[in-house]
Length: 163
Image (tube, rainbow, N blue to C red; front, side, top):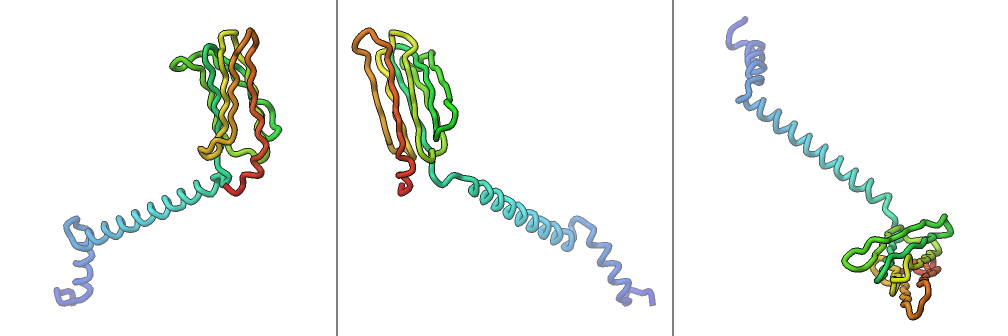
């Protein structure tokens, strides 16, 4: 009853062999575990990518640049009647003074105001973009002994929904 022909003895022998690293059962187990791990990793990656794209703003993004020559500038901007955001640039970058800001497309309006910091400021330019398309721009140049001021007011964001 306990000899090699006994099916119980044969089953115990197979179970013992499955623990050896060179056995087929061991290799099959490793492959199955690897497949399950890769599948789970791909599933988590897909969930992460989908989750990140859900929070993206469908209306696009806007940015503006202010550039001056000869001297720095200061000012502020207001998006959709929120609180003013001040800025001041007094250090040149490759011979000009630059301030750039990127933000979600406003619901209704953007107002930008700048004034020269010194009498040396010869020009101030403001450019407003939405999704890399120029929406508005204005440049002011100093012609006399005056303090240079520039502003842009754009209120057509609600009209741009077709873009």
